[in-house]
Length: 230
Image (cartoon, rainbow, N blue to C red; front, top):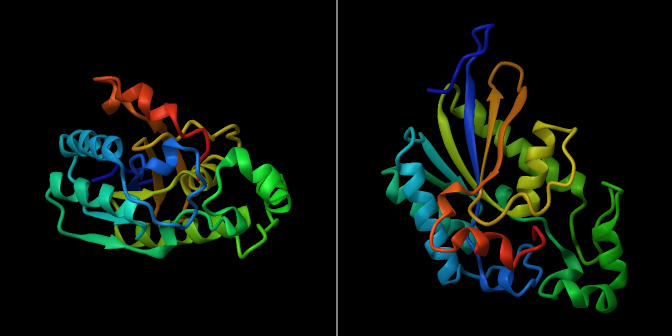
């Protein structure tokens, strides 16, 4: 059970996890809603993450993006934690990156300058050319779904597996004062948010924890190849 506030309201404890590494992460290729699988490093990261979560309080459910890199991470967690309630949903997908999909970040500036400018813009209503989402659209999609999860699991602990930019928006909603989130959410990192079932008040308790990777060089690997969230 998640803790109660001094006023007696129960919070849903949402353990938000980023998927394991893919070869596209390592090569700094923009994934967005394209669907590469975990590489060998990512699979090992997922196992180490799942081992950690299996030693903590058992989650009532595991929710995940339906993209392969998240789904495989979620399945590894669910198996290790003996959770049968595993739900895949498009609402937890990465930001749609439009014309930037499949490009290396270093090439995107010259290959798709308008799309890259939109991606880099501080305007949260700026959509990315080619059908890409604005940050506000991404935030609305993810935050709405987490509120739905919280409504279903009042007073319980759940795991949510998603993607870098999506998790960034989730954490910013919980703590709007937070800045420079990117690179603080590495692969298989854990962030923890408490959501009140009564008033949907969000509290960010933990951000980007990768303590489970602090062995055999995996901690360095977690930050090594993926300077971007998408």
